Image 1 (cartoon, rainbow, N blue to C red):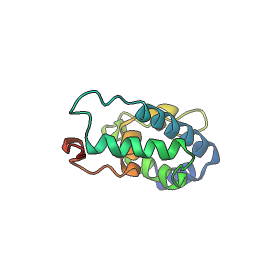
Image 2 (image 1 turned 120 degrees about the vertical axis):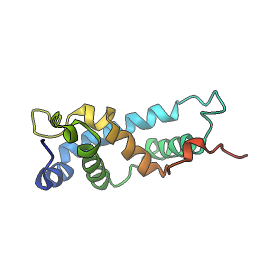
Image 3 (image 1 turned 180 degrees about the horizontal axis):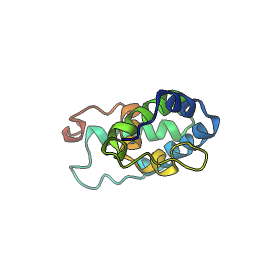
Length: 129
């Protein structure tokens, strides 16, 4: 079973290239959440409210500490993906996690939610006016 070593995690988290790619991925996720339609009562919940507020902050230039974000994502990646089940780690030609990991993985969604402040159960709490 292949895992990211601590050295790989710290090297990647400190990589300017990975950080720039991650900023782009976070902004893409923020654009998605900013435009996410709240057209049903179920979608108008506390979790989506937090995601949309975070999206507004990111798109207005308040990107979180990107190294901390990278460290969180990389730590979650190896426990939320095929790395745990022996499928291997998705690395690009620079031996950094691929764009898909940064933008379209369970770890990237969990990282966005963590930095947006989404708590367990928020998706079932309706926003009160």
